[in-house]
Image (cartoon, one colour):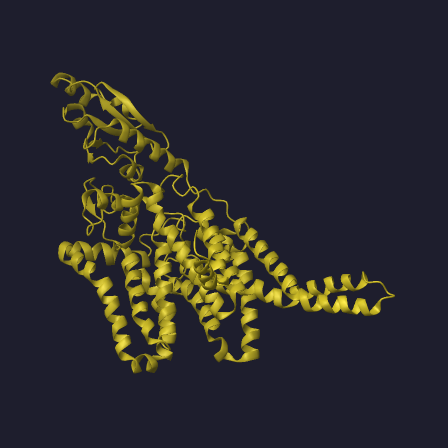
Length: 556
């Protein structure tokens, strides 16, 4: 039995905040952990992160992210992938050490980052409004389709939610550090982690923070020791790996990290065909195509989110007019934060909707104000008045004193009940509207087929045995991207002639419509019709010289 005094101490320390956060954790676990590893890795971009993480775990080369099927090289050897810093790979690798090399482990750091973001939303909402706003905002964040069901949200093995978490920490603690300078090194650590997650993409949070850093520059300079400590912390966290990569890879690091990942994207060279230019050479499509996001099928739930943001703007405006700007400057900061993210990518370049993800935190906090404000304002008032009226009419007319007492008692006791009912109703409606606006599948048949083929290879091809790949005209490199994770076998490019003549070639991946041209006895190990490939095992020695000559002269 636990002594009563310890139970009493726990009860004293556990308050409303702990209960609310426990509710958030339960909701997060249900939405983000359930079935996290069930659907296959997406070729773009999950395989780009899960595969290097696997190689780190198995080879021990934690400083050198590597891919067999790199998008920037033509061969199939393990080559460095330096377009992004390695923090995401490291976190995925640590998860794989604990949970095995699985898709669940690859996605776990991203899912945990969502929990951290929900905690930030609750904290900021509670600080800037009240607990109800913090809880509502956390719910909005967790159910927002771009976070819950997006290809780069909290259930994908990608760095975007990690970047949002670390960038949020930098902005918030830098803001708080103007008054509490001891928080500035914490802000610096978050800044370094953001850079180590996605490199130059972390600059969007500098844009967010720049106005208040300039506005309160004297306060930061007056506390120069803490400010210097913040800068030093950022450098200590972010610089060592970048120096290592530069020394180890030289121009290749600069080419991948700067030119391919940043400048080419800004100029539209890495744009998808569907991404139209917004301004001149820039490639962010939401200037020209913005209106299309406000009509069905409600892509990324923009209309619901937008209505919530408008409601939050009305709430903040009324509070500022009533109390003055100084009392609500943090609310205004959140508004700027939410606007600065899309504005940055419109001007600096970008071509993907998930670049909006860093605005989810301030946006969720602001939307969380709406249920609380409605419960305190018109909606809550109407519920209280209606219930009070019913209670008053149900009292016997002959007992006027009792009727007055009952009505008065309802008026005094009912605000908390009515406000809670109105608040809960608005939260549920907003959550349902958000979830209902997105129905894209988390996994595609193309990805599932690669997983199945890869698992078959892992089960039938001996460890360390190479697979020789004949690309042909119909096989794209992306057909091998997830195979490296599931099969974990070396790939090597090969010509049809080598497949025919080299006795070292035992297993091959060939175009599905060219298999009949292989004039060497073989069996089919696995077939990927959607990916256009077939995996074969050769079961006889290569053909004779005469047979090879006859094959080479045969028309296609």
